[in-house]
Image 1 (cartoon, rainbow, N blue to C red):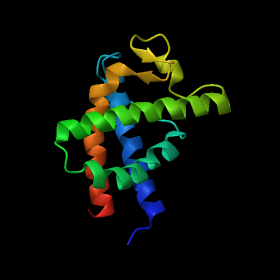
Image 2: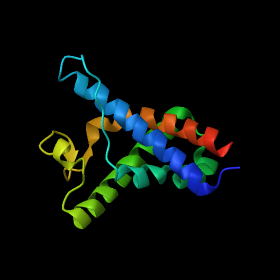
Image 3: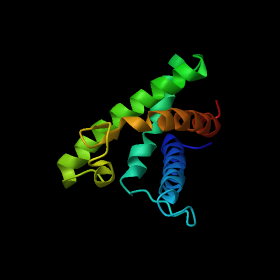
Amino acid sequence: MLLHLERALLMASVGVCAEIVFTAVGDSRKNGGKRLIGYSYVWMIPIYALLYPGFFFLLPVIGEWAWPLRAAFYAAGIMVFELITGLILRAAIGEAPWEPEYRGKPRTVAGLVRLDYFPAWAAGSLVFERAFRLIAGV
């Protein structure tokens, strides 16, 4: 049986891998789609690891909601958490790693959250929820 820390690290792996795929697909539009080079940041490992306790506590409360409501709730929560962790990283190291990519983009909150990514976070959150269910055995 996996320990909670091991499960959190598995969730972090899912999150980082999803981010790598997302950035590769997004950047492929810029370079003609010939190379799928994705990236993430080491800082994202502990941030994505927090998905595990988040789902651990949220799923019993909202797990029976219709999937569109869960997806919207999760996406809003992820964006608030992205803002909070971005502000913490900005205070600790000068800027959040994703901040240069977001700077100057429309629909950006404090240079740390892109509101146009809400649909992607909603879809991704359901993938994360499924991963959590598999990892936690629920």
